Image 1 (spheres, rainbow, N blue to C red):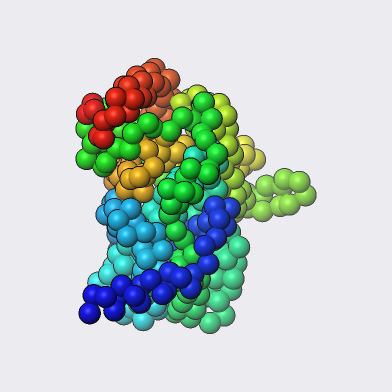
Image 2 (image 1 turned 90 degrees about the vertical axis):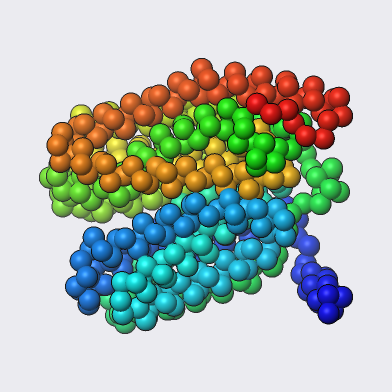
Amino acid sequence: MRSVVDRRAWSVSELVPKIGRGWQLCVGIVCMAMIANLQYGWTLFVNPLSDKFHWGKAAIQVAFTLFVVTETWLVPVEGYLVDRFGPSRVAVGGGVLVALSWSMNSVAQSLPVLYLAAAVGGVGAGAIYGTCVGNALKWFPDRRGLAAGLTAMGFGAGSALTVLPIASVIRNHGYQAAFLSFGLVQGLVVFVLGWLLRAPTAADLAALPKARHSAKAAAIDYAPVQMLRTPVFWIMYAMFVMMAAGGLMATAQLAVIAKDLKVADVPVSIAGLTLPALTFALSLDRMLNGVTRPFFGWVSDWLGRENTMFIAFILEAGGILLLNQFGHRPLAFVMLTGLVFFAWGEIYSLFPSTCGDTYGIRYATTNAGLLYTAKGTAALLVPLTSMLAATGGWHTVFGAAAALNFTAAVLALVVLKPLRTRMRKVTSVTADQGALTPAAG
């Protein structure tokens, strides 16, 4: 029986074309775009669900929380499966779960079913996210920041082209039709393209361009357990949480902030286009949140990871302070929230690429997945912003967020950079001595 299964698996792999790294990157970007609506398109369904079932928006948003938690905290497990069995099987399985999730949403008649569908979607989205980012890290040692940024851009801006069509289907045919049709299409695209994903072989790696001096790869591949024993990982984890918390706060609370500042419905004109300030801000923020990922990833390939982190994190802190000072002006609100999102989204390219540089290629998907759980940790802090805003106003929230960003910027240069430099020297010596495993710590 085993020989039959092996022959079938081999025959399937033979039928799949072996595409090069450029196409691997493109496939990863498209797959990421197919899961973007699970996070960024969810807001379009909240009101229709509330109007039909009267569950209350707070209860419905629990589904979104479950999605984020399962999408982030299970990525290390899914990354292990990628490193163990290859990216195609995990991505294809993720596509099936994505289609199943929104199909379940289309027929959900109770909150438990809605919550179960969110968890299923989170597992599927996390599988695809971890697979595609990890694959980009492995295929592009010379452009790791840019490759990770372009892949993350698919998730950050992938819903831009489908927001209006989804809204139109909801308006004309109901939210159930939108869930079912877009869920099946998104899942099918990932299911088909997922078979094309593959990890680079030893021959592929030998033929790939080498990393630049500013993005030197590890001389030794660190297993996940070994990585967790190093202080560098925990410094990066803390910095990731600090940066992600502010951006997630802005994502979740932007409409509330605009309303409290009394600018939400005020018309704003930029380059001949006039829209309400909140609508303009949401559109601009989504675009810049996508563009920043490959931009700062590319910069970090040349300038160095920590140097780029310092620049971007300081820019984020400054943007938040300016928003705190001038956000009550509609035009300033639109422009400054754009700056905040532009200086925030790059964490999804800088941290994975730094992780790949530091801990090597072999376990890159699992290791990057462990670091990505920082987003889930940061999400748990977001409800605190509502409490802070209720007691101290948004000025307190903005001040705290800016302080976290500034702290992360200082840590990048003062702590992370010297630690990584020392770690590279230690692993280089260990590798020269022929050791098979890195020295712990």
